[in-house]
Length: 289
Image (cartoon, rainbow, N blue to C red):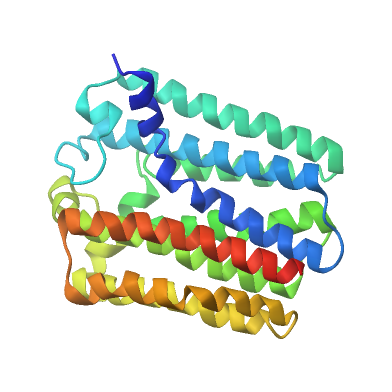
């Protein structure tokens, strides 16, 4: 039976910056037009974090029962390692999705934007069917598309809409930037796992386009958001605070240029998550100032 610390590790806390960053940018864009509400922003953050945890447990369960995680380089998975029964991991995923839904329902009730319930339902379905169901889209090379849409565009602009009642250009630009970095996290993970994914029949985008092109795409996903931050500076020059991430961007891309593989990509994966969090915080603060 898995211990509490193993369940916490199974939630993959290092991925949670991908949930927080879009909320920071969305809230900053709302504050830019003087429409910030702390309680609503906090609830949006909790929705995003619970959803991310649900996705992580769902992936653990679905990949585990398919046998995809039997030979992993990354963190230990609960299902594949036998630390927890598959059904218990599935229940944990449903519980996290349920928490996200309840908080989301509270937020919708407070704001009156009831149509966002449909958006929330789509987010949960996208989280489950990324690796779940008979034909998971993550196994067909569409994982980055789902991440870009739901953890980039929807999460960022949805936060702005909840707080301000409309979406702004800085929110859209920031959403694209956040979405690209979130995709970079997934791309770094999939570059690391190309060999094992090929054996398991998991046709991620990295598998489909090959190692070299996947690394080039990762680098583009790291640098393009900085250009989008410069575009945001036309609306608020404080958005240029985000350019402080130039050196971290260099440090992340160098291992990709050098052809780092396997365990050597784990620091890149962790660093990309922190890069997204820093991007979200700096751009959010810059837009709010």
